[in-house]
Image (cartoon, rainbow, N blue to C red):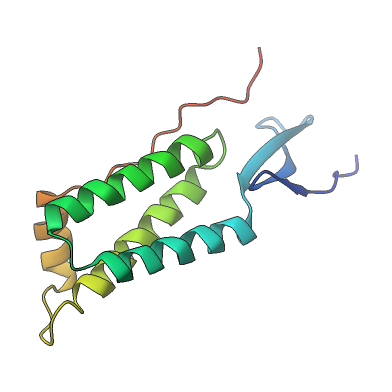
Length: 133
């Protein structure tokens, strides 16, 4: 049995993988590397340029952007891709919120256990199933 090639389409990389009992190939999808890097870069620029917003408003806007990303990329087999995007957004927030003044505002601990508890980021959900029964 020969494994088929992968291809990119509409921001996804389609690839084949063996199913659980290793009897046949199943088509799977993940966020394409090119689109992932582009989305992360766009979000980093947005956070950098809007870090002066009040925190409540900033997190509200970021959650809106995350919701849109999750709704498009949150498909079966792409959990790792959307979680990676969320982690990149968190790191970008930590980095740029610490540069709002000359003094460092947050440590990793105060960022995760303080700020992200007060203003939680939207968690990714996988709602679309590509399985047909």
